[in-house]
Length: 145
Image 1 (cartoon, rainbow, N blue to C red):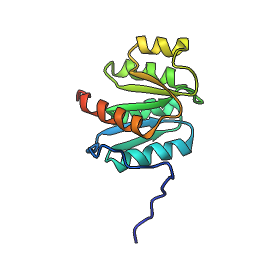
Image 2: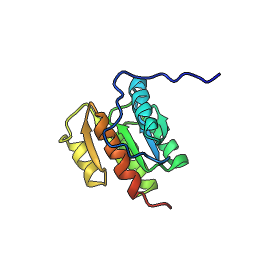
Image 3: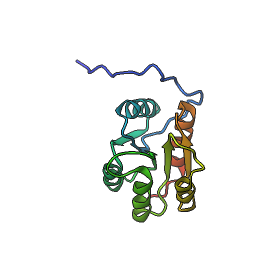
Image 4: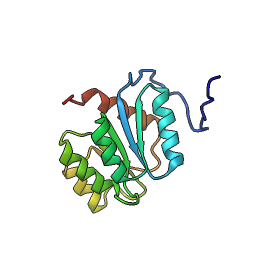
């Protein structure tokens, strides 16, 4: 008997039907509902999704999985997204990291992170189209080590 997958009412099929073809995306977010939504959307489009609930766990998962893209909350317990981003960049200077935050993308720590190689700071909520667009774009340019 197959296990029924939980679905979320926000999920819609992206207008562009191209798929992720198994490219890895790491979602680091302390809100389990958001993790579920992001994971469901990305998996619908054939991305291999890893998840972590805080920045410290996210750094460990990054080392293990070496994903094409990391989508990370900026404000989390234990280790926030900005500090986790710095650690990830020390591990892999070419890592593709996006921070999603409830704060302004123009705040000083966001601007500093962009200077250090952060791809983008996105204000919450992160929409379906933008999530898939980012995943597709950065899964294509990741250089295998």
